[in-house]
Image (cartoon, rainbow, N blue to C red; front, side, top):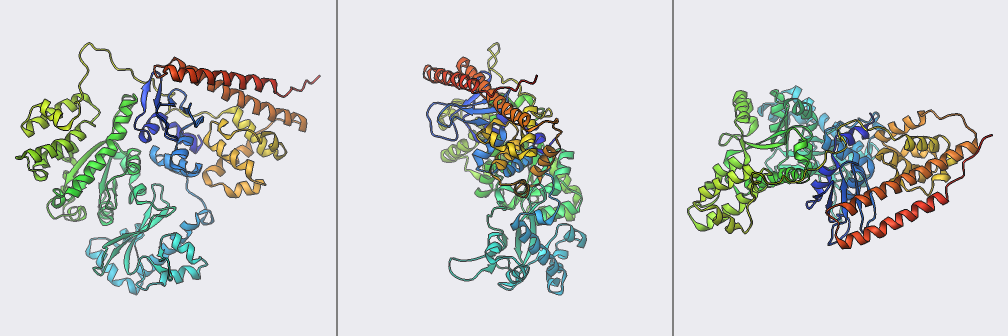
Length: 607
């Protein structure tokens, strides 16, 4: 199975869309929402689980698959969207083979990384090495994680990289140097212990730097660049993912040293959030790797408002995705959901200190980690003055929102009653205090809410579309036929890979230019298309075949569109106003189909 097909087979479009579109709701066999790509009052955006497609019947008048949705939502090119969805699905991205295939900024990162490592191993790095030893790191661990030392001079790294042929503006763009509006560029990391930061697939994306002389800030990260975004990365995830998948558990610590010491001690399922609350993108990475996530917290900070806000933010990101899955009917199509738990560390101890002193205690802390809701109940008296009405109101507002996002009405009912009892009020008073109706379990004998039909087996292997593959192979192997497909809309290709290759081939002057433009994952698909066996034919037969394939792709697209419009007309979501609009669209689609057949290329009749 090709890489893009494997990614697509592991994703449910409904679930992906729901994570971006909060108001996605079930409407019969499909799902509806206000279109995320234009402003509207009446929902015209629909997702079709059985087909794994989406379409806007409003101003956008477009649609596609999971790749096209993420490309439009995140404003990414296909390769970037593919990598993002691969991380979400937990599918390893094929590694690039040669250093000259690296992104230009990654080349600078690699050169800076080598320089940092060399400096740490030199006489100048003696003090930094002593610090690492004092923190409990073995030389083999330092080498494994690629730790380094940045030069203390203001331009030493810039001078080194410039001597290697890199331009100063590129060095600044890579994030290893900084430059004010006026003035020369300067090294970003100066006299710091450096930690290379990789994405989930092991590609070097940036650096973290720890001050060794007590200067502030203690930790400094690369700025946001084309490759580095702290909210989309988890430190050491590429090393931890396999263990997470095997154990079913991911452990999240805060700092680089915590994660490194954990790995050194054999706890290979540990990653670091680099001092931030978990973001939606980080949650997606964790969900692709494990079903149980444990956050290790410093007990001394447990009562601080910032820590609680961080926990609530992390929980909300998890539950937004869980509740979206429940709402669209996909929750019960999965064997289990991700749970978020809290491991509270001994007072004054960081994870690395606990692990170095007593690994068994670390294992016990993880094993006894509390569910987040339970943890917040236990710590509520430290956060709010529950003896006062104001404190009760604050606790009710925060905890009610968390409980109401559980996604299980019976558990919500139990926890809400527990909250009311803890606050010394009735359930009705609690409900009134937050101004929201409480969720209620379905009464016995009541009709069950409609559940979505299972997606068209999103976990089954995706088969190649023979029509698309034949046409694309024909256009690539016979470049003289390209003009016959010039007016073909790229969205007619259901495969994201094939759509991207077709789009680029239509604008590239030569095959050589196309090959040089494609990244590794697309280049493999291109090689397969070149290897596709075409039957012997003359020029006229090839032209006829290309025209016929273009015709059949357009016909299929219009028939699919008619089917989607028919689904909408018969769905509960269709209002009188939308039905009138859809009926007009049906007429227009039929006319387009009729015009297509009138313009159909004549078949050659061989005698």
